[in-house]
Image (cartoon, rainbow, N blue to C red; front, side, top):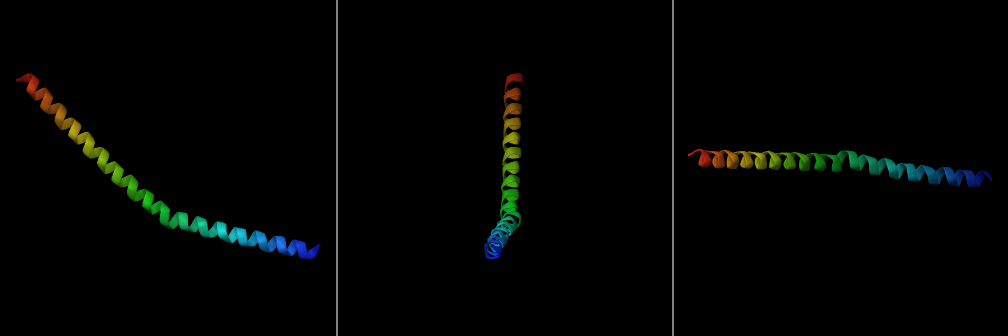
Length: 65
C-alpha cells in the first residue's frame, strides 16, 4: 500500500513539473509573440482608418466643387 502511494506521489510530482514548464513557456514566449502581433494589428487598423478618412475627404472635396 505504501509503495502504491509513493508511486502515485511521484507520478503527480512529474505531472506538476510538466505543467510548470508549460506555463513558464507560455508566459515567457508565447505572450510576447501575441503582444507583438496585437501591436502590428493595431498599426494596420490605424493605417486603414487613415486611408478611409483621406478617401472620405477627397470625395467630399470633389462633391463640393
